[in-house]
Image (cartoon, rainbow, N blue to C red; front, side, top):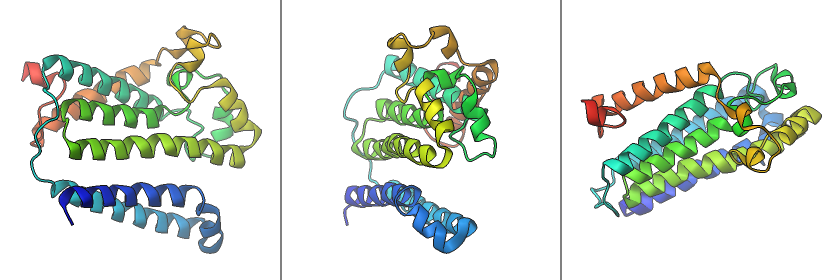
Length: 233
């Protein structure tokens, strides 16, 4: 199999098994295997298919970029990754989408910070991360890999809305009514204040710290130098 065909095949397998196990097959398998047994199967499949994607990615030959990448594009991509980092860190506290025992309590709160931007800040963070990588590594292989991550994040978020509504009932439906799937949709429609969407200090500071550390590690581990380190290294 050609390297690109192998990459596409493994990416489809990774996304397909994740979505199938997360949604249509979850209830039946969990009923047969039990919650713990299902989590073991789910983890094994996820790790195995992810390893296949990584191996296929490493087997890709060098590819010429589809467009020129200058400092301006690097600066924009770095800013997008910073936003993604703030969304990710902000999503770790008070997120009813996470499998936590106090999810219903979190869903009863008024959405503030990153949750006033979107009810799926973590998944939008992954999608923005994928977009930034395409911007500065515009090769067919990177586009396939980044599209895989973005599709898994956003399609998975839509499926999570359905699953959470079934599991949490009115608690989730109330949360969904006070939040938006698309970032800033409620602010643009006049349903929410822009001030509510200012990330909390822990999200801002933690996101900046994550961004600095991750972009530093990008170069330290032998990949392309990223973020502010492109200009201050």
